[in-house]
Length: 48
Image 1 (cartoon, rainbow, N blue to C red):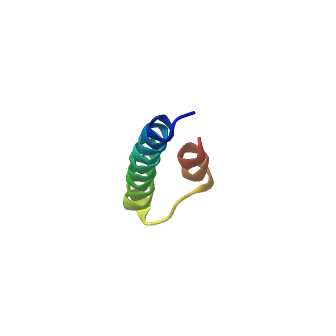
Image 2: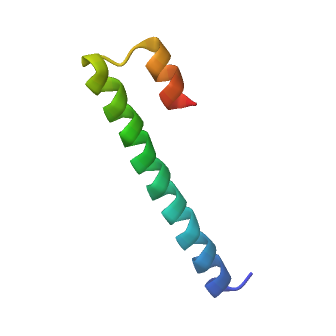
């Protein structure tokens, strides 16, 4: 595999990770804004 192809794949992977990290933070914020506590049900939803 060429270095360019590998660099392109790594860049796409970093973008996907960044997207999912932001999504996870959104869920965490949503869960804690409801009542200030992340319940078991909310934790399951976040983890999913």
